[in-house]
Amino acid sequence: DALPIWEEDDGEAHDRRYRRRAAAVAAAASGSAGMSVGGGWDGPFDRDWEMGGGGERNEGVATRRLADADDGESDIILTDYYNNQYVGSISLGTPLQALSVVFDTGSSDLWIPGSGCKECGHHTTFNSATSSTYSAITDKSGNPTLFEVDYGSGKVTGYTASESVGIGQLLLSGVDFGEVTYEDTEIQSFMMDGIAGLAFSGLSMVTRPTLLELIGTQHPEANQYFSMYLSNDPDDTKHPSHLLFGSYDLSIVGSNATWQYTPVIKRGYGDFKYWTVKMSALEVMESSSSSKVKYDLCKSTCYAIVDSGTSGIAVPEDSYDALIELVTEGLHCKGITCYYSSEDDFPELLLTLAPDNVLPLLASDYVSCSRWGECVIKFQVSSGSSYWILGDVFIEAYYTLFDVENMRVGFACTGTCSGGSWHGQGGFIEVDGPPYWETLVLIGTSLEGHVRGRPVQLTHQLQLRHRLDARVHPTPSSRR
Image 1 (tube, helix red, strand yellow):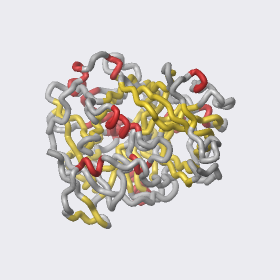
Image 2 (image 1 turned 120 degrees about the vertical axis):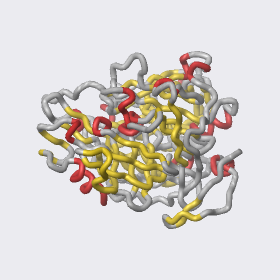
Image 3 (image 1 turned 90 degrees about the vertical axis):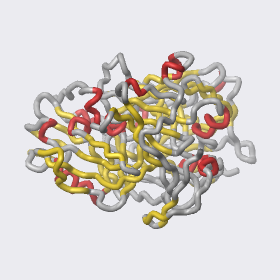
Image 4 (image 1 turned 60 degrees about the horizontal axis):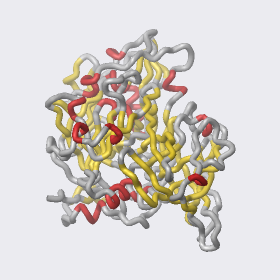
């Protein structure tokens, strides 16, 4: 049976009338625009957060495993760039053309560079002229509909179009996407060609219906969930980082591994937006004792977004300084960089997610140290926001299941959850100058543009080779 939906009002939990999950999941294609997230999470995080979902611990949700797939093509291998960005392949057109994207659970739109882009750097471009299924989206006057996204380091511009899209073994028809025809200089250096958003319709303004909705309607035979495994070893060939639609493989974690579920939540009414979960505690333990709590940064209810498009852990502005001070106490540090240190010098963190899942983060999960004793803490500030962002650092520690049908997120554990200790350590970070984390730090950025005559606010997190100081710049476009 479908699990109930709970709603919250003004941060206080109330039991509301139960409704079928199907009504909540089937978000209309005409959903409202997502709100902006500032660069370095710099800017207002002003949303009507809504609650729904439901979940039980240790209840198996999937019956189809990796071994049951027809072949390995359903397993999308993700290229691991120093545990800091994970890039996979997506295909567009007829015949299909492959491009690289970040599969981003923190956004809901698909955009890629088109062949008309003369300033797209090394990026592979999509040639619409060779595709028999390509269709430009125009306004009432027959003019192409403009697409523009602004970042602190520049912008991408282009047009909206519709095309067939291949994701693993799944072929989707009639997918609306942004076809980029121009990238500013800094954006040309991004590792991936484009972005494939895997969040909900409340954020989408270009890809409507969203990729997740299209999978549900065009492939009802497929299990409506996807799993993401991020290895912390870029050289791991036995179990490389991968994304799997409609299946999972718990044997990667262990023979007795199970999913610890937490419901996807929202506050108020409207379409779901992010993979948002409820967090009742974030405890910093004593470095000398993993059983003694030093401080709880989430004494009242907190909210967190599970976001594969963010490299580290984004911390609310009002908690960031306190957390850094707590984890670096007694060490020689400047900001998130510490000297003459090792992972053993940093405390364990305990995150408690609804209903009662205690998920530790070991120091080795959130700190990267060089052999020379320089350590970088993978935290970033979520400016102007009260929401925590559980990025790749958390997904590396916990093999993650994004369950669309039941609106919940599962984190794999064998017995008692113990952070990323089950898959060992990645390699050292070599330091011959600025820490690598600082040259590849991922900052959540704010982007805003206009699509189909309406102002668009799209949320996106991009892996950059420098820090972004994002600003929102609305721009004019054509109207229907």
